[in-house]
Image (cartoon, rainbow, N blue to C red; front, side, top):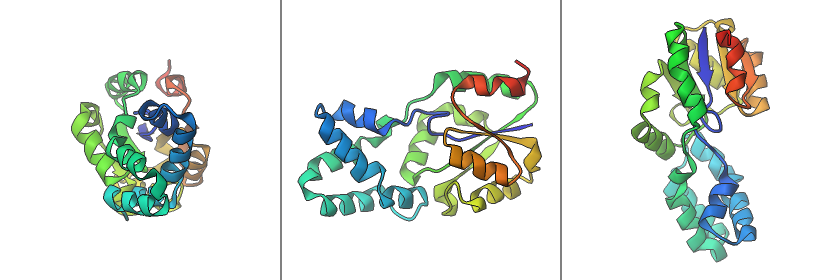
Length: 194
């Protein structure tokens, strides 16, 4: 079996509002910044590898000049948002020991990809994967799943995909992959006979 993992909220934490509340004590400010940055079209463009952090920051600051300093601080600190989900990381060696393959399939920015690969050694256990920023296609577009399957010559029915977002899981199912909405490592256990 091929175990395929999303990254955000599966392998690393991704809680933008909590991250911003940690940077700024004013909860209303944190909420506004979350809308400005993380729910913007530019965030999607960065996932597609079509815009850099610096370019997005410039757009945000022009659009919301009253928050310029806070926006700059948020973008400069964004790597702190991504910390390992240890219970998932801890189960990866056991999956390999059972003879399964490990892959990742994630919507992610170039800068965040580079940070994660440099900072976290657990990526070395993976057999491969696809980052959206490298192929300019994001989940849940069918093309990202097809690219992944073709790149590694995988049979969809022999893959089980774990993602925290239901729309991404449904899109993978539409391509023939077994898919599970990830709510914790207990989701993985049935596929390991645990």
